[in-house]
Length: 195
Ligand SMILES: Nc1ncnc2c1ncn2[C@@H]1O[C@H](COP(=O)(O)OP(=O)(O)O)[C@@H](O)[C@H]1O
Ligand SMILES: O=C(O)C1=C[C@@H](OP(=O)(O)O)[C@@H](O)[C@H](O)C1
Ligand SMILES: [Mg+2]
Image 1 (tube, protein in one colour):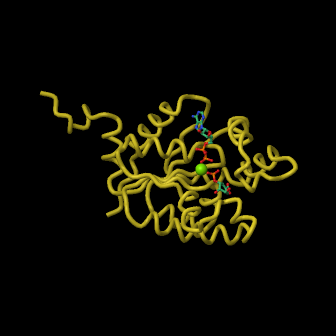
Image 2 (tube, protein in one colour; image 1 turned 180 degrees about the horizontal axis):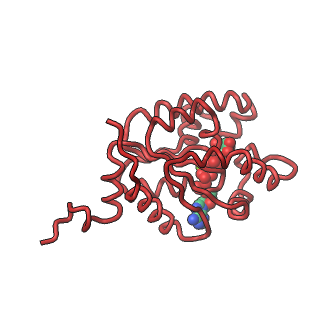
Image 3 (cartoon, protein in one colour; image 1 turned 120 degrees about the vertical axis):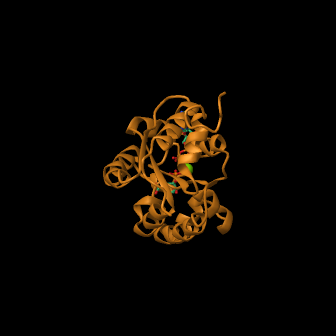
């Protein structure tokens, strides 16, 4: 008889959920990598709650990210982001999609590392640019040459994102394919859960 609770016959999502345990799954990566979209779908596949830190920041402040940057500047935004992340990561398991700069901030990075398993959605410049140039919701890209700005951010940030527990290449494939690759990375992850 096939026992569905056996690791071998369990679905990929079930195996990933088992491997994740009580930890959070935290998406990091540059703007346009798909943290918000793939995070949401991954949470659905795992059957656990999803939260996007930017949405939570907008909810508590009753302002958009752009408005927060314009009114208070990036430093204040980072402080608010760190406070929100600390609260979101307190209990798990849930999927938390962060904004692209969260993991770059030392305080937030410490909380993220402590808060669960991190997955970096790594993407090349053209993939990111294709996605972000369609919207003007990202204040850091309101520059004279936003594609160059994105490239500069890649250079500065990729060595830091590379500290993630898991890395999945974000590219022009179906979102479902991305989710499967994330689930497979979790299921294969050897990093033990902290007691
Ligand atoms: N694999 C994918 N294929 C096509 N479009 C994608 C894919 N992943 C994300 N997107 C789209 O790219 C845009 C940016 O994704 P988003 O999740 O907002 O990125 P992030 O939160 O990392 O900035 C969204 O419109 C999203 O639907
Ligand atoms: O890279 C960044 O510093 C930022 C990324 C944005 O989130 P997404 O990565 O979800 O676009 C948002 O938090 C803010 O505009 C700053
Ligand atoms: Mg996002």
